[in-house]
Length: 105
Image 1 (cartoon, rainbow, N blue to C red):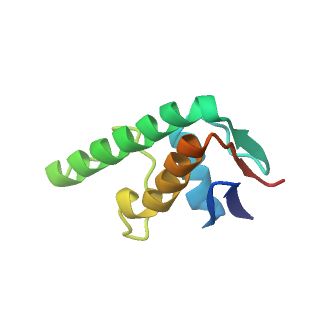
Image 2: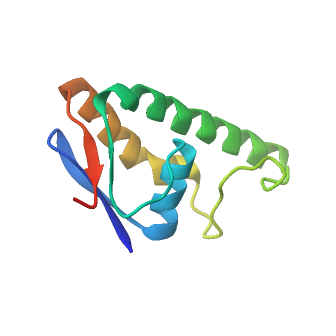
């Protein structure tokens, strides 16, 4: 499955299933084929992503076991900051414009 996160405020953000699942899990959403992040939910989603990035980078710098910290990670070597950046930008622009972010619709 491919996630295509859309908003009337910005360009689409497309992710493969594992990466889209990771973003949704971080923001406290159950991975699903379709959904919506409302304007009211956007600030909390951004905060969760930013907190996860900080925690992930701190764990990397300490060479801690990320699984013990319950951080969602990928095996492809791409940092969470790089992977989440476009999604965070979409959320920010959507929040400023007062538009929801949707996928699968």
